[in-house]
Length: 383
Ligand code: NDP
Image (tube, rainbow, N blue to C red; front, side, top):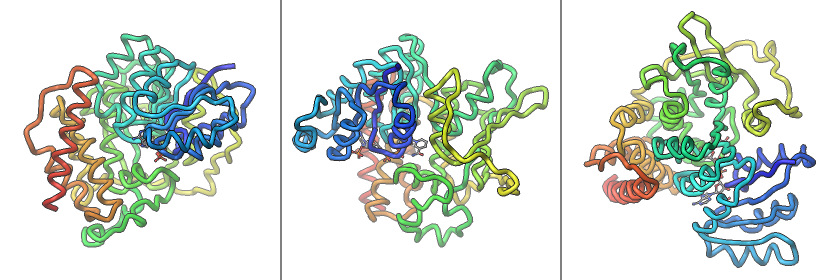
């Protein structure tokens, strides 16, 4: 039996992970489950899985969590420090599935325990790339990519040398607004932007998918996980989301990973790594799918991938600023405060200000994140 903690248990990735644990109950002991404020949902999961600890990041939600756990054996805690303490209790596998840079502290706390960290929380790696990868090496942790594209690349690189790689190609579905004109994009509503054709995901990543910022963040993520050089990482739009990414080697061979658009596939790969586990998913039916198509990204209508690449090239604080500004802009869009096309404009404006030097510690990354959020919030006033 192995122990598992899930940071962000009440979210979309959390639910997919718990579904796999539910189907393999004899193999897992649940240590800690966390949420932001969905206390009742968290308590129900903690009871169902017999978790030792349940934590809400927002401590104003702790009374509701305590009430919902009354009479159970589950310990309850609240607040950002409790979240990091939960991650630091150590588990054989920690699934880092909090959305946004809010997941950075707890993810780093899990890495410092030196176990397996299955990383979904791409914003943490984008903001703190060098700091996080150095911590992984220092603490002997194993970072496994949950993100379907990076999990695909990880699988395609198995037993290979990075020096033999010519290209890493990230596939992008293009999101629900892929074929929209600039005029239509300017009036896209939150409901339209989150209506992803292939994947059922949380609201923030769904909007990122519609703007293509998700792919931009993933280019930066890939650059940290698979350091072949930024110029060797490219993006192709593949609306069917059947091929999850590809690696081309110098000899002309290209390896790809294919599978259904279901996060339980890459999560299962992480949970069972270095082996495989059975899932109940429908097998890939290629004759029914019929056609796979590919397009070059259109950075005129969707400038996010260009912005992300520029931030990665600039290095230093730029990726953390890009991420923070995007989080602020997406929240404002979802709240109906700005237009869809303002998201990237706001990110570009925030990036154009003076940037601080490269953050070398977790606290420095968090300081850059805070400052960028203030700048992005100021920019919001003028949209
Ligand atoms: P969701 O919005 O569905 O879930 C987010 C989880 O994080 C919830 O448990 C939520 O708690 C918790 N949370 C939110 N804000 C905070 C906070 N400030 N502090 C602590 N916990 C918080 O997100 P997803 O599951 O879609 O995505 C999670 C991460 O995985 C993201 O980084 C995303 O980019 C990445 N990812 C997601 C994929 C997907 O298919 N969904 C695919 C690939 C990557 P509460 O419920 O209480 O709000």
